[in-house]
Structures are given as C-alpha cells and as structure tokens.
Image 1 (spheres, rainbow, N blue to C red):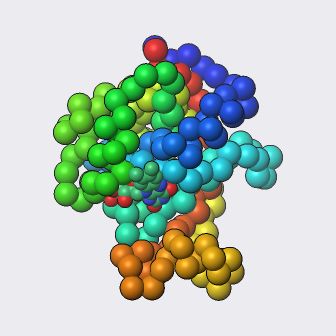
Image 2: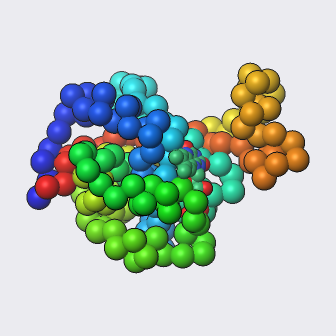
Length: 173
Ligand SMILES: Cc1cc2nc3c(=O)[nH]c(=O)nc-3n(C[C@H](O)[C@H](O)[C@H](O)COP(=O)(O)O)c2cc1C
C-alpha cells in the first residue's frame, strides 16, 4: 500500500538520513540498480520540489541515469538491515544484481519507470529536469583535495548534479 505524503512534512526525516546513507535507484533497459548516497539536497527550483543527487562519473548508476533520466530515492523509517547500505555502497551493479543478492523488494514506480524499495519505505519519485557537471576549477581547494585527490582512485572522478523534480512521494506500508 502507498501512503501519500507531503514531502515538506518529511523534510527533516529525509535530510537527516541523507548523511547516514539512503538509496538512489535507477533503471534502464528493464534492469534496476540501486546505490547508497550520502550527499543530496532537498529544495525548490523553478517553483518545483527538487531532490538533487550527486553521482560520480565512475558509477554504473550514472550510465543508467544518462539512459533514463528518472530515479527514486528511498529513505529508512525505523529498523532496517544496515547491510543493505553497506553492499549498495561498495558493490557495483556492473558486477552483480543487488536486488537479487539482497532480496530487495522492488515496487513499481507510479510516475517513473523505476522501482521503489520496500525495505526503506519513504519514497521520492524523481524526473531529472536539469543536470550539471561539477566545474573542478570552481570547487573549494580543500574539498577538491579531499574528495578528488590526485594519485587516488577518486582522481578526476567528479560528480554530476542531477536535479530530480519530485513527481510523487509516499511511504510503502
Ligand atoms: C555511505 C555512503 C555514501 C555514498 N554516497 C555517494 C554519493 O552521494 N555519490 C556517489 O556517486 N557515490 C556514493 N557512494 C558510493 C557508491 O554507493 C558506490 O560506489 C556504489 O558501489 C556505486 O554503485 P553502482 O556502480 O552500481 O552505481 C556512497 C557510498 C557509501 C557507503
């Protein structure tokens, strides 16, 4: 069952959990994939409710988002298996089917062709209405050194900001 929600009433629940880890799900060519995100922004642009996700160039999620500019965001409510965030934050959908391996319950989206995940029941459905690659030259040098350090796996692995208009918001019950 879907319990419709007003996203602003849950803004605290959503933004508090972003820093702890939530799920960003994509789907293209009929294959869903989900990854853990720790960055995200909830707000308003062009008079629309927006969730902005920041996805590094190297993520399989990025390739799927470029094919289908839609995603879902799933936020935990209460107890849940933290192993989900661990696996989805370290393994790539290029190498494994995270839904099958973790036994995630995919619930079809209502306004997007991407499923929601029942185990983390607070769901935002989003359609990308704008995207922007980070400009390395414009990043604070301390942040640049910390997150994109030369000689590490993150060198030049910059983020793209995907601005998703929130087209539906609900809790899976
Ligand atoms: C707590 C946590 C937060 C993360 N946040 C992000 C994020 O905001 N953006 C990002 O690109 N990767 C983030 N990652 C890394 C991805 O989840 C990880 O690289 C994942 O394996 C990518 O999966 P994919 O290749 O199937 O897209 C995070 C990982 C963890 C553990």
